[in-house]
Image (cartoon, rainbow, N blue to C red; front, side, top):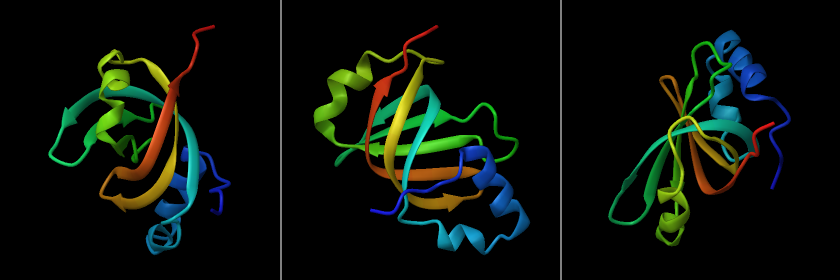
Length: 109
C-alpha cells in the first residue's frame, strides 16, 4: 500500500491549490495524530469523528472502524490524541474519510 508522504497540513495545501488533487490522493495509507471527538455505532461499523487541530480548512476526519473495536473506542475521551492509521478513502467538503483504520492513544508529555 503506498504511503501518503504529506502531513495533514501539507495535504490540505495541495488540495486547496488544485481541487483535482483530491481525486489522486485516494487509496493512500496515512498515519496522523488526531484529536478524538465522538463516535457513533452503526449497523456495520463504528464511525469515529476526530479533528486535525492544525489544519485551516480540512479539520475533520471521519473514520470507519470494525465493530470489534467498540471496547477501545468507548474508553476514548473528547480531545484525547490518537495516532490514526488507515486508508484515505475520500475528501469530502472539509472532511477526510478514512477506512480500514486502527489507532492507539498518544501518551501525554
